[in-house]
Amino acid sequence: MTNTQTYTVSSRIDDRGDIARIRFSPKSGGQIIPFTAGAHIDIYLPDVDLWRQYSLCSDPAETGFYEIGVLKDPNSRGGSTAVHRLATEGAEFKVEGPRNHFPLDETATQTVLLGGGIGVTPMIAMAKRLHALGKDFVLHYCTRSEEVTAFKDDLDGSDFADKIVYHFDDQDDSQRLDLAQDLPAPDPDTHLYVCGPQGFMDWVIGAAEGAGHVPANVHREYFSAEVELSGDSFEVECAQSGITVTIGPNDTIAKALAKEGLKIDVKCEEGVCGTCITDVLSGEIDHRDQFLTEDEREDGDQLCACCSRGKGKLVLDI
Ligand code: FES
Image (cartoon, rainbow, N blue to C red; front, side, top):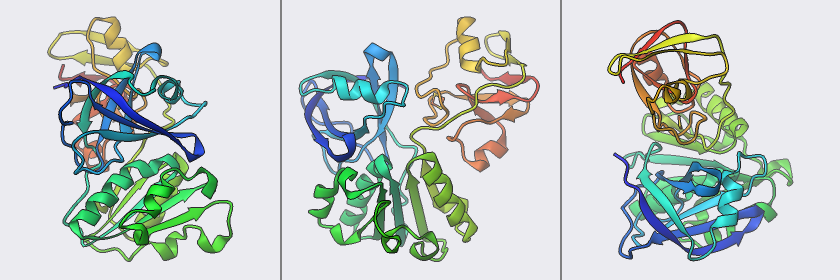
């Protein structure tokens, strides 16, 4: 169920590294809908007609506002530059959520948070929560240089500053993240969380799983992904609506069905947010998303309709 609400920009700080830190408070006053560490909100950007997902970096105990950090990325599809342009104090936005596809296991005895660049945002909320719980954790924050390290002043002044280790690409190797040394030994009660650019994610996940950390304990949140949408044509039958369409080599299931009047909600359109998850009754799925876990893929009963395809005919439960 969607819960679209109107929020007002209550403050904005332009931090280092072209990162805007923006707080949203309910337009109607009162409290925000509560969230848990790792959650995100969806923000609608009218002039580019896009919904974009942003991880919350505020303290989950905070009740008056959500805070996000947005990197101005000229190579994005326009979402981040639109936020930077539109999110002035007092501006109003349609917001959905919060939702949490990246929840924190609060029972872990040891937690390692690994944030690359703007991927640090959910880690900050997690660090605040873990500190409040009195848990053992460390936050590794990797950036190109200290000059572009947003949130640093706040983190250095926080009560958990001693749990933060910075790694700057432009400084000597001794302070770089060394996964062979910096990751703890695998243990069922040790959980790792990683968010950042694709190369950073691939590197950390590969090293962690290679060292013996089980995939279920290596939690990941992709904030964008390069997704290959094209492929061979295939047929999709929609069991409930009775519609059957052929998905062309450069089309997607969601777009092809929309042309037939059957709308599947999409937001990121690159397989990272999970908005377009659709149940599959039969057929072999060619998963292209980053959202589903390996176990969910093996179950073969759902797909991301914005990007995934079929190897032959698929029957969907819509
Ligand atoms: S719309 Fe985000 S995963 Fe499909």
